[in-house]
Picture (cartoon, rainbow, N blue to C red):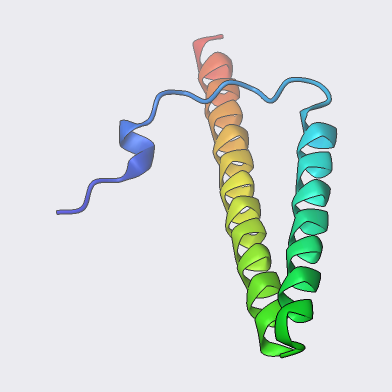
Length: 91
């Protein structure tokens, strides 16, 4: 007896214009931030594992965020398709 998150969620609002560009800028800033910390981790004792761990964590975070954005986009497309089908049936 699983509960689907799509059953519990309210309809998502469409993405405002220019949001993808803002999100891409934020992601680029996170990559720069991760590189900054990776360099700092490496200079501590020149152990290559330290910056790799930092960069792996940054990559995992960004990957998870991208997966959530992709799921949101699919949900929006599905809702738009259902809405269009409903309109056609009413005609």
